[in-house]
Length: 379
Ligand SMILES: [Fe+2]
Ligand SMILES: [Fe+2]
Image 1 (tube, rainbow, N blue to C red):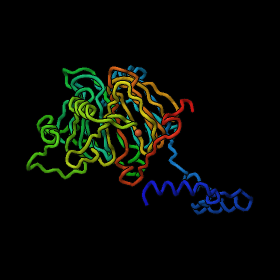
Image 2 (image 1 turned 180 degrees about the horizontal axis):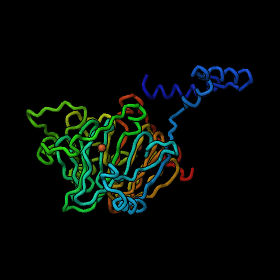
Image 3 (image 1 turned 45 degrees about the vertical axis):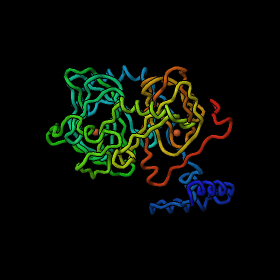
Image 4 (image 1 turned 90 degrees about the horizontal axis):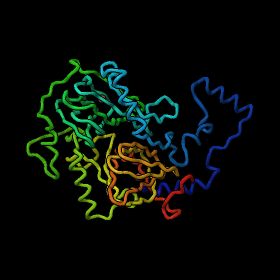
């Protein structure tokens, strides 16, 4: 049975309310429930409707984090704590609804990290996969398993699960800010989290600078006699320049998606698949005046505005955004994107948990058909 057939079958089943738990409390039942509790058990019908909702129920809400609100607080953190004290000097995005999870949306974590010229954080490794998106500053670098990468604005960088990695800013650079994205809530939910600090606190740079780009960064070309057997992309840095050019070329010949206009996924150049087993990422270009239609799908998504201005309507709420703002789309929330400029394109960086959702056969998508495919704001 296809996903769509399953969904339709579920929808038909929905008509039959008799199929759902519907038991009223009685003194006898309440006593019975108390008896079960003694043995660390419970009656399924008391929780069945909650743990098996008709459709995805995200614990997260749509949020827009304006960079104009956050930037000064991120910069201030550099006056308050050193990277050594903080481990990582980060202001994290908190959409946990008071549940004590470091959740930006769904099971994704995100935060804004800053470093000053000459600063670096100690090398470490963890079970979570991580990515960075460079927001501002000159001279930022990341070292991943002995490969040093020099980073520029709008570059996208991987630090996959289990790799030794460390971040810093060259002494002749400027204060840098970047967005971190990790799958920490997912890994913690799976109770599989390990963390270790490099025994020498710093790792040696054993490969030529930017070597992953030299080997794997050429489009549709694969180096001879270079092996790679890791479950993540061998290309660790995806530069903004070639990414933007690719989007423009795509836009010049394609109609685009009614929902996303021109969207390209960052991929593992060996497989064409997602960059890491648990985190996927994309960059999309909304052409001048683009008005997207609404759809919804499973999976959690965090966007950063890499270029331009516009707004998104998420579950009936309008969020106006400009460059460097961050917003999230929770699972199964209707969303539509608009570029409000008639002359300039807008670009949205996005990372998500699609590799997990797809691997578990949990992806489902549908368009909004009412109201010409657009949500009612406030509806
Ligand atoms: Fe890390
Ligand atoms: Fe979407």
